[in-house]
Length: 206
Image (cartoon, rainbow, N blue to C red; front, side):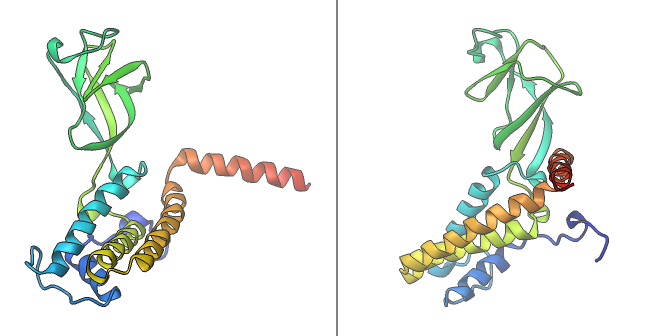
């Protein structure tokens, strides 16, 4: 709808639909339900799960970002020699750590060893992290990338067409670059950066 942003018009990503779209696109039989016992489902499902984890971890997607309070760990679990008294457990299902906060303030003086973040503060530590988003939160362009990766998986496992599978993956990678640029436009810092570049170019033309 005109005037609405992407977040307002998203429909929930449907795993079964993506799997069947990929099976149709590769000339294979579709499936009726999740966990279907067929070879088609097993191949497409494996490719889907791999694609979701891979894509979510490739970028700090706004739709995959969340901020979580970190829980202190016992000193015995904190292997830091620099901050041996203040260790906090990172979320076990995160893919990437973007920022760390003490209260509402970002700070960068911390150390990570394993899944423990240690710092000079003893409480109110929060982490902005990338995690696999719920199906309802995936951007439509990211959903299309996943579909292309699933197609590639089907082509390899079911069709044994390795050349075309590689071509589909190349198409997914090209779309990934376009999607990064489009989705990142929601970021104020990115828009400010682009505005400064545009202003500089206009001044050069004068």
